[in-house]
Image 1: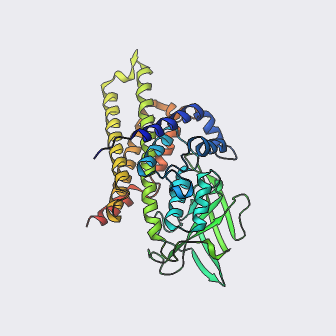
Image 2: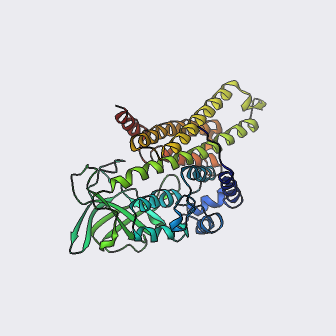
Image 3: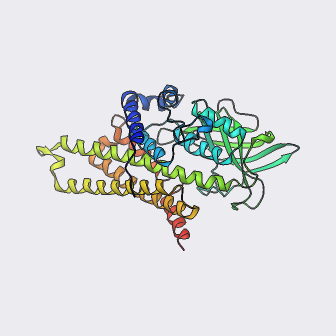
Length: 381
């Protein structure tokens, strides 16, 4: 299997790396993340107008470039290397993935807005009793005349405070944990001025991103809010989440690569007993172990990227294997980087602490290692 990038893919990587290197200063980006806005709208506009990465993996029918899984991996890896907090994953991978797979004129309209940088998506899927099991849905949607009425609650809706649109999963038939009977609904959204029937509790996550818990009480939506086929949303959600796992795996690879490089450089400069600490054999062994974990994570990222177009069981196995491998590597590399930096590793001034927080969050994003080990075992019986 050849993992060499094409000339166009290398150009994409180089252009994005150069843009972020020139304009995504860590101090400035962390200040923006902690501001009331929580992000940099000018950077998002640059992603759309200057780089075109918001449409790089979306179909040409919605003004995208028609790229695929490799382009997604390239973009996500560079965003992870720069510790970008703008909602690329939630909007372009999850939101656009759901819209594209669901299909329809309304979905294509919002996809076009995503490519132009005018729409940002949050997926309201997780519920307090379900953990990361996205087909465990208690939120209900019922018909009232021609309209839909939604009732329920969603938790940890990442990027909701930044979103212009919500996609909400709700049960239209079946029992609570059934995969069949789940439907998706699209609505325009503003967290500062939510629609009637939506209560928003916004907060900042440990990795300097934003999220919200939502309570839906008699939320009335028009007939065209339904995305795709009623009750068949799991066929849309499952491949989208596996694509998101591939993207977050690549993001983690970029972040871990930066963390390892910074740690090696620090070990060359930090003096103890009159010599650089990097000269101590025990610490050299530790950094070699970090390197080996990174190499395994890179391999897992490549393999899940190659499997995204495979049949569902093979795709799911690759996604779960990647998630387990990435979670282990993120924990090992993040913790050892902090330890090798000493107390400075968790300060606001050094990048290491910020990367460590993001790598810690990635370990649980779209499911924990234990959950994916269980899914992998079930898929290989």
